[in-house]
Length: 127
Image (cartoon, rainbow, N blue to C red; front, side, top):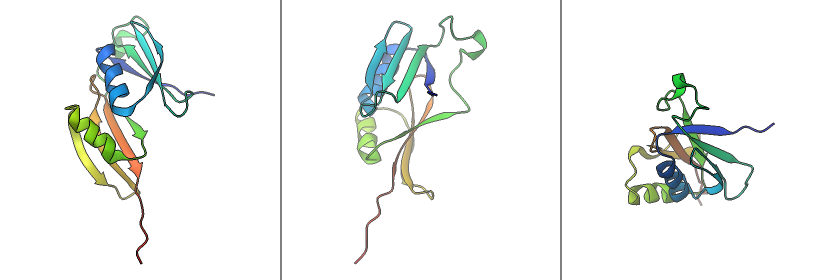
């Protein structure tokens, strides 16, 4: 089994640039109605962007994404946060350490999808 997340996009070019520039995702497939991105470490980890008003998306679902969010686990959340700041991406929540052992920040993609970017908390041994 394969699981592939697809996000409906108002503007494929802006969405594609967001994920490539912020997270370093690679392009696996690119067309005028659908873009398939993948992890630079594993091309089988895929993330799709589909033009929101494409005929494959039922009219009732051609809305901004709500009631869900996508999490990207990265090696250093603070590096990605700084990149987001430099790109003038809106920040919903600044980086903070969470009770469940991760450091994360929240942003949104160009179509309004809530994006959670996190890293496991680094533990240091005290002498």
